[in-house]
Length: 194
Image (cartoon, rainbow, N blue to C red; front, top):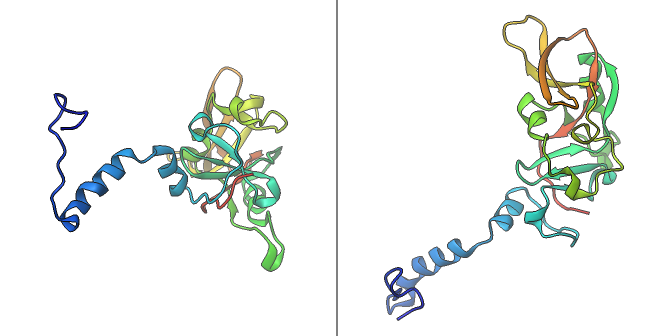
């Protein structure tokens, strides 16, 4: 009998090791760490030993010249550099698209985030990651609106912007000829944490 006697039926694997494989696989999956599963899902292959992964949601990345971070909840990679100087939508798209240029050694692939991606970065867990030296909008809480690549339905030539203001986070439409800040994200998996 096992320790689980009284709580559940005792586990007795079949005598044949071949037939026992599904049982052993089920036990291994049940005992797998959800943090490791998340880590593997995000494509992380190494990390800096600091706090336990489940205690920290945002991690600085070794790639991109150390100027990016990974959100372990959504696997989104975003820049630590935030451009809060307002520009038009066209200039914002160009700014993200040209980040990391440099031929075969460049790290391109940056883009404006969707409305859902940008609002997902609003969290009270920023304090756990050591990001105080950066002007991360959810930490600095200003009235600067940031462009997204989400079209605002119902308002012609308007796009959704996100403002991480002091009282709350706001989503509003803005005409593409108006100006807002830029926070670029990347749609590829991370491969290493600082």
